[in-house]
Length: 287
Ligand code: C2E
Ligand code: MG
Ligand code: MG
Ligand code: MG
Image (cartoon, rainbow, N blue to C red; front, top):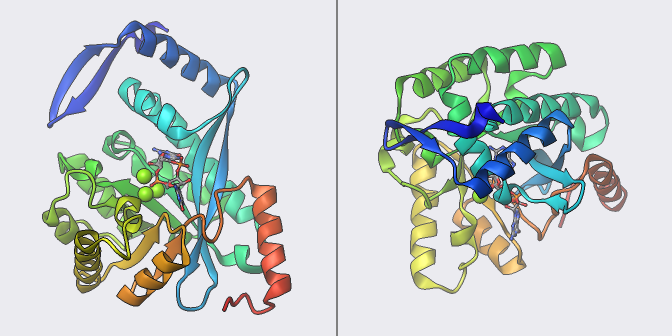
């Protein structure tokens, strides 16, 4: 617990020493124990090609199986994990577990699926991050092109040297990069221009309001056009209705992820979901 009492964190490019308030501290030590006790697991949400209807990838999302409180969603603990630095070992576990899982899938649509892993700015800033990714790819045998690293805009806010070097190095290995939740954080068009990204994920807050809300439509269509002109492939996230899907397909989004298609699922459920799809539509196509 001593290791997490005082924590170093980054804000506006300045390193702060911070003492956590007692409730965060208690929570942080619980999190630390949960890592040791391996109480985390991954769920996978399908990502679908808008045109072919095929499964192209899955996003790995962390869950905490808490001994008393049941399943705890990431929004409840990622923040404290970032403040304390625990996100670094946690994120290392996520990356390895996700890559291991994906290489274990040998059949059907899953055999070629990409895996998207969320990476925190703190991980990206770390000196050894690229080496760790390389090591995981080597150990699991996953092709670099099948790994997509998802970064939120806050990862680029400081555009510190190490993060940028890591991004460039990851690109050289062949790993794909996605800009997550685009349009919400400290949106800056220079990031879009300068980051060597492959995918742009339009945030759910925009997707929620289309079609119908004129101002959200204007922002959403502008993001899609801009992203496409910069040669990003566009992922619509959080799609819940047919109307949203039709609208976003019409704008030219390439991929889609959302409850309309599938919720994030533990791996055995994902297998069943893929199997059921194959039985309905043998070629993996959807209407
Ligand atoms: P994200 O990376 O933007 O992930 C998408 C989130 O949207 C997931 O929430 C997913 O369950 C949810 N979602 C997907 N489709 C729909 C939909 O149609 N409707 C609604 N209402 N929600 C949808 P989840 O799993 O709770 O994760 C929340 C956030 O926590 C993630 O947002 C990501 O920022 C973070 N996170 C999750 N796993 C990890 C991880 O392993 N490492 C890090 N650093 N962050 C993670
Ligand atoms: Mg994500
Ligand atoms: Mg997102
Ligand atoms: Mg999000």
